[in-house]
Every structure is written in C-alpha cells, then in structure tokens.
Image (cartoon, rainbow over all chains, first blue to last red):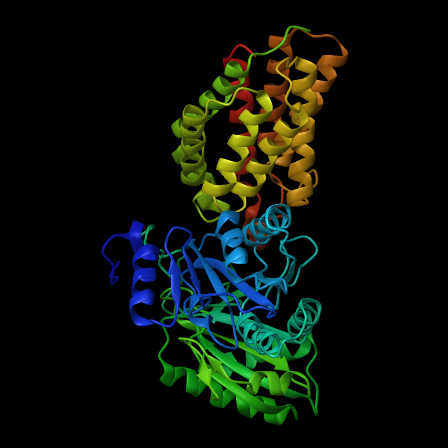
Length: 332
Length: 211
C-alpha cells in the first residue's frame, strides 16, 4: 500500500484539518467531524448529508452556497453516528427545518433515522429525509438492502440546495429531492479494487484482464465480472443497464454525468464521456447538461460510473443556479 | 423465579459480554470480512469498552438508567449498522424496566422481548434474513417458554443460550437478505452471520453471572 498518509487511524481527522486550512469560508467542528457553512440563515431550509469517508469530494466538498449546509464525515466507508447528524442538524437549523440527504446503505439509513428521532426529541427541529437509491446494478431490491445511493446524490444535493437558497419550504425541498432521486439512474464499473487505509490491502481481487460491472462505491460486488473491454464497450454495457431501467427514451432531456471512482484520470473520463454522448445521441436522448469528473469516489479505485438524470423546466434552472463549494462552483 | 436481580449484577452481565466480545474480536472480524466489510469485531469491541467505561463513570443506580447508558454509548461509538441495532436493543431493554430496582426474571424476559422488537423496528429484519434476529428471537422464545414452565433461573438462561447458539449456527446456510451481505446473493451462503454470533455471546454472558 502506497498512500499519502501519516497514520491510517488519523486520516479523517487530518483531512478535516486540511479542509479547514484550505477553505477559510467553511467551518469545521472537529469533535463531531462536521464541515459546515457557519451561522444558519433564518428562514432557509438547512440541508445536511454525510456518510463514510473515502468518497471525496462527497459530501464535505459540496458544502457552501447553493448546496449543503453541513456534511458529517464518518470513518472510512463507515456511517457517521447519530450524535454527528444531531449536532449538524442543530448547527444548520434556521427555523425552517432541515433536510437529511442519506445514501441507501443499511448503516447510514439507521444512523440518520436515529439522529432525526433525537433531533425531534431534543431540539424540536423539523427534519425530513430523502434516501437516494439510484444504482441499477442491484437488480433484486426486494430481498436485498435495496439499491445503493451513488451519483444521483451529488445532483440532488445541488438541485435541492438551489431550491433551499430560493426560500422554498422544507416540504417543497424534500418533494423536489424525491423527484430528483426518482428521475436519476446510475451504474459503475471497477477496473481495480480500492484499498482501505486501515486494511492496507485491496478490498477485492480483480485480475489484470477483468473488470467488475456494477460495482458499489465500497467495492460491493456488481452484476458480473467480465473481461476488460474498451471504453466504447464499457459505455455500451453501462448505458444499456441505465437507459432501460427508468427508462430513458427518445426525446428525453438529460444531464449526463460521467464520474471517476478515484483512480482514473480525467483524460480517460473524457474518452468515456465521448462514447456516452454518442450512444445517447443514437438513442435520441438529448443531453442538455453534463458533468465530468471525480465527484463520488471509492478511494483509489480505478473505474467510472455513469448517471443520467431526466431534466425538466423545474430542475434545469435549479441545476444552473449559482453554487460556491470546494468541488462545484459556477454562477455569480 | 421471583427473586430480583441487582443492578450491579446486570452491569456485570454487560462487563462479561464486553470481555467475550474482546476475546472473540478476531473471530467476529473474520466472519464479517467474509460477507460484510470486516469491521464488526473491532467496532463492537470499541463500543463495549466505551460502554463499560461509561458505567464506571456514571454508576447508574437503576436498571433502566444502566441500559439507557449502555444503549446510548453503543449508538455513539460503534457506527455502521451494529451501533443503531445493538444500541436500540439495550435502549428498549432499559425502557422496559422503567426505573424498577426489583428486576425479576419475568422483567428480564419482557425486557429482552422489548429489545428484540426494537431491533425489528430499526432493522426491519425477519426470520431467515441471516441477521442478529435469527439468534435473538429464538433466545427470547426459549426464555418465555421457560418462564411459563416455571423453570429455574439458571436453567432458563441456559436454554436461552442453547437457542441463541442454534439460531446462530442456522444462519450459515441462509441467504443474506439484509445489509451489505445481501449484495453477495448466493455467495453469502455458507458463512455464519457475525451479528448472530455476537448475540450468542450476549446470552453466554448471561449464564456466567448471577442474574
């Protein structure tokens, strides 16, 4: 294992120190491992998220104007505990309530649920939750923990964040968040395993000539292990699964998001994006917005995921609205 | 069956449980590595050490406050799914005892039933999902059955342990339907569930102290 670390046990705490030093506009609660925007804005719905570390810039890199108000960092690939989300909820509650954005993993869902119960009991803060579950790789949702939350989470945090910034109510922001989740689908492919720092060795074995189609962002097994293929073939395999699931059909307007899993260069992500764009054109699906880069990562895993989100007249302007966070920034 | 259990003996139950988990930390971690993410042993050990330390510091006077302290500490320190699940088990266990110092075996049994119901409410698990439920539910059933037959206390707890261990062993051929292991599908078959294994240790601890 070759990693830029001092001590595997301190990796999250030390990274938070770095974020605090690099982004003076943000604040960090080191005790609770929370990155937050500062004083809550009266009347604005607060939005918090969080999850295990190792997926950066998700979620801490999306704290700022037009997106999240706070992000709770768990240990690597381990859900944060309710105390953290409770503290974050109190930090961002400006009286208009707080939305919890939760990725669908068993531990995350339970810890956020407990935090919401504690918040209601302790501070009276009104909390609504949205759980993202856009990973089509999980085909059996009934007899498993269900589909996992992946790429759509970023798009949801951006769009819900813009709506909250406009002064919409908690119910409206939550409804919008559910709509984003319902209209987005994703799937990923791993070319190599990730290595959890504390474990010191790859999470799973993957041959030089193999790839894991439908991999999860913690190295969960995907749909199948197949021979390594070209970017063109990978794009076809991934989009076949994503397009047919919602489904996305001719005439749909979409945001196409090609995401890197942490160990794949941007150069390759653009090769992938080119293939995705061609396939979508061939299907008559109109790409009206795009996002290319590593936003939902799995430590040092090489590979990519593709997320499509159906856009309409409500979602598009919210996507375009100004955002100022460490990882996403545009508009004025 | 009617004599009550002292709060300090209930605390001792959790101390023994913490010791058994510490002794079996690597076993639990290996079981979890096979079908989960390999941190169950370390997480439970860390949480139970914190719970025992919290008891030393707070010295709860009542059974209810004792288990509330344990539950809250586990929720705050274990993380993952095990924190909310084992935390809820003890929180509900404590709430069921509602500040009585006169904890009888009937109270204990009812509290464990309440704890099980809390686990179900939190985790939505059913019998056969390959989870901690599959060891805990048979143990509660066995205790209730022993109670109805007026079985002696030590024997009742022994029967609960046997039921928990049988339930634990029965998870091996099961197909996981909850948590991270569920993504493995057929590949989860043939592995013993780590959560059910920890529950069997909880019941084993109960047979080692004068409850």
